[in-house]
Length: 184
Image 1 (cartoon, rainbow, N blue to C red):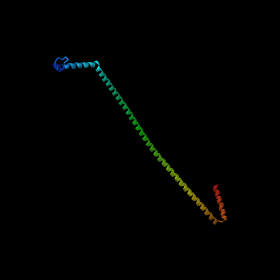
Image 2: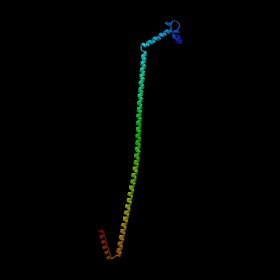
Image 3: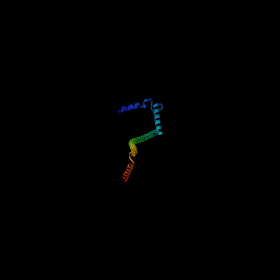
Image 4: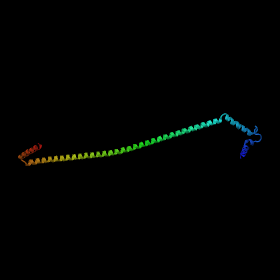
């Protein structure tokens, strides 16, 4: 099997495909082989494979640094996003707290206003009742004074008509005595 493979390899080589001697300048296969070897030799002389490797290594390093930079930028962006989300939650919590406090304060102010209004209404009703009672007392007093004045005037006229001078003097003395007794 190995011999058969070697025969096929030699039969397929370009040296056996051309006619005539292989090492001749008239053989195009030989010329192409020499040109290829010369080209490869020039490439190795000017260190082109090393330059290509260096360029590829430099490009790989650039790509690697770009990837590292992109990874760090992504991590930084994620941290920044997390910070903004946390701040957003804090602001939302603060806003909710402010709204809840404002509602509580408004309810407390409304309750205080209701209580103050009830007290004010009660105070005004009491003041009105006191004014009504005072006015009633004044009217009753005025009516009593008027009645007393009318009764005194009527009694005076009646006494003047019915009593004589002696009876009037006795009544005056009795009244003076009674007033003196009440004052002492």
